[in-house]
Image 1 (tube, rainbow, N blue to C red):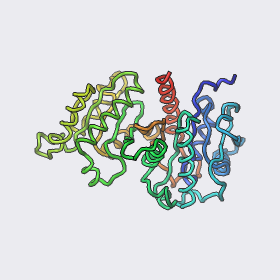
Image 2 (tube, rainbow, N blue to C red):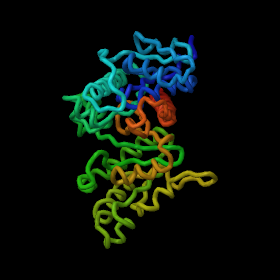
Image 3 (cartoon, helix red, strand yellow):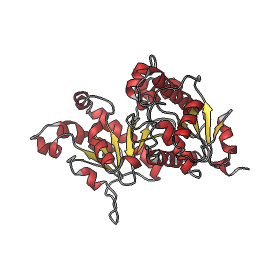
Image 4 (cartoon, rainbow, N blue to C red):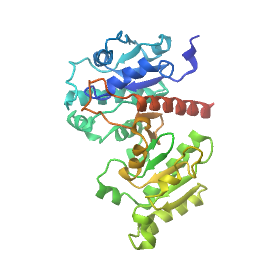
Length: 357
């Protein structure tokens, strides 16, 4: 029996074929054959073959293995790039250019991988970056989603015959030093302020608790960031902390969750950061809106950041960066965040498998 028999199958989606997704995927399989065992690309053979040529730099080109089914990935030797053609073949797109065809191909790869995960054909999916403008150009239904998270939520809800509202999800960004979960995701700042409600904050705390408990094997220590400077300074700089966030924290505590806050948002992330010789005081920070939470994680190193969607009935991770059209096709892209996402997906998939045994 192959060594990969007990490993969960992981599908890596193509991402926008005009961006760095195909390049970092090819580099991941070339440079980390041990980590990428039982992984395959849900994508387009032609786009991945172009990527292997772009990264060759005079060395032998990484061979592309065309799969007939996901399980075939278990039988392959290392140092090849296994690809399952999950979209209709199409002409290669121009690198670094926004296009409807690229957005459509990226979205269709995500749809296939999500449905495969929901059917139990794969243990996890790792999504390479897509371009939101290209997604918007791709037409219905893809243009109805601001990004991966909302698309995955809608697909999972439809599979479970639920409304989207009945399957709330949250975005967690994580690296070796810090984890952050967001109350709202892709909203304008003005809309994000309106999304800071008692129900939204409490729901975020509940999702964070359930998800991190499964990951850590124990109840997580959750810190909550305030919304206003100095967490409102007792109401001097806004009442959201007094009227919304603190009551939500109290309700979570009454349910047995280990939650503290709200804390001043300019210092709470430092208290939850693990550094050399200094353990973190908290396992995760719940931030009130997108940039409040993502700036500290990305400042610590985009190359190691991983995006995890919490609340889904499947495991999904993603690199913590975009399509980088400015360097697409140049061979400069760093696969480190993708490798971190694969590592995280395997860990979460194993945890999920063990919890069901």
